[in-house]
Length: 347
Image 1 (tube, rainbow, N blue to C red):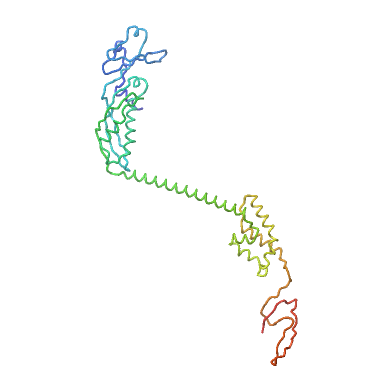
Image 2: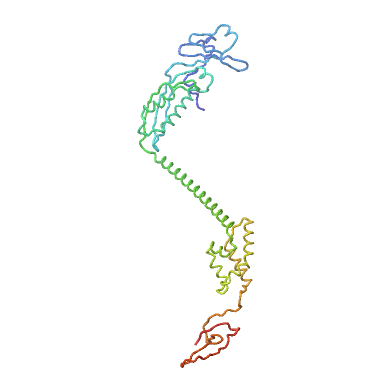
């Protein structure tokens, strides 16, 4: 347990009845605070004796008192020492001080604080720690330290006042403590990396939210059951869609859309109702499955002639040719068979 600095320095001293013959009196340089004993162990402030003043006989006979002698003399002092950080990283100054003070209010010192002198010492240390960090190591001098401590002045709640200070030892460490710098660098790096991770996570989250909003808006405004719209919005599914149809069926794509449009709309409604994502590849699968089970119906002649290469050449029903002498000769040719609707070019 830390010793009471006020008692240690004799700033407050209790006067015994034996020493003062049961008649305490004030003396020069001191205030004598009388506490009247009340009830079972209680006390209250009764009077402050000035130099030469005593109690009356009736007061001594009718009551009992505790007398506390408070030293009011100026230029009392207590020591302060320690190493204090400066503004320069890893650099400190080491000080030993002798702080002079006096009592401004004897009643507060004697009654209202447990260790007023100890608290004043702590205040001086905390003030030096705070203020010296604002100075570069090379700018700190004994005069700087004196100015900081003298600026404390009166401390009303302690009943004490700082008068002056004497710097008994002053030394600065021009070397940079490498371990302190390294530790600060590590902490700084950790803080930067943590900030980068947080920023990256927040940016990724914002990007995902933006993408979801864009997709939701697109799905609400674009009819993906329209194959033309689907292929424009998602060109990557074009090979999948076109692979479903033969060259002949591609010419009739518009006629087949009505077959699968209901299935696509049902899928979109289902995903929207479940808050699911509409996958264009799934729409491509619906197209493939539905069209594979419903072959298209041609709008017109069921057989269209195709031009292929072969041995037979079928030109049509008739043709006119000219002889060398100029006469026209009509030649009839056989009609193309319905079983073989090809026009062949051959030898």
